[in-house]
Length: 345
Image (tube, rainbow, N blue to C red; front, side, top):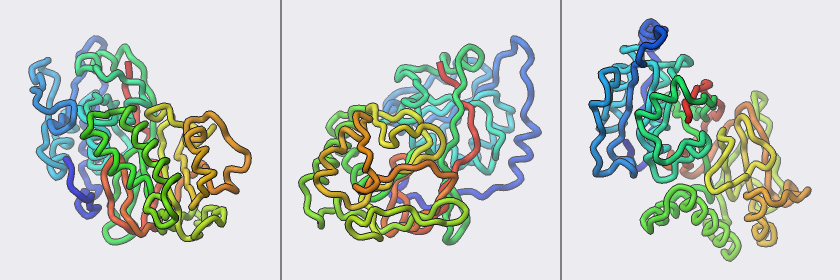
């Protein structure tokens, strides 16, 4: 369920399906087996070459959409069954596609969600503390016996052309886009999950440290970030070109792979990190900063900005990344999506 560049025009618009879903929702009787809908992505890293057990029980309905365009119909079919649990079998990209296509179907009334970590990095399940070997049956059992963790995804809406939107949990631009491309090389070398993230971050910092100002890792991307409803410009340290940022990173997750803590003490809500064209001296302390080992008092003056935002607009001249996939340059509104209940062990 992936294309080279994610086009917002391909996303479905909200429609009357939401009302049909609300009528289909029901309350389970005590002791009644839950009705479970599964979106299974056979292309996910952990699913390749493996068959999925479709006969686990008569109350489990499995959809295997061939591509993103088939997701709305698959989700509508599951919603009309009044599912008690939606299981996403795939990686972060599959989660992004399901949440994005499900907006028009579930609106703000989603069933509980369980995610089986079958992707290459699985950042969401790191945050949810879901083990890599979690199975469908254990996820179903956890609906009644496990925990529920609430998270709100990032909702990105195009402000140019059709007002379509996507939802995911990690967004980045500038050097983050280059890092994502480097991460693909790490995957080819056999590094996945937190190891891949650690390798990619280390490589990126090394490029920023050794590269010249013209190096793509240091030159950054032209972007305009405006905060809140008032559209106040995000602060800039004055280092380098004030119209460019070396890196942009945003997430609503509270725990990140490889123990990264780029937002410092900020944990909940929509968190934003923007890095100006910083000096090599500041770059040298980045490993300690992004892992939470140290937080110098003058980080903002050095070009390292962190904050929580209700929403912001981003006008960016280059591609940005949402949960591992590239999106085109343009102007976007970025905010929090609906509050979702994730079932965990």
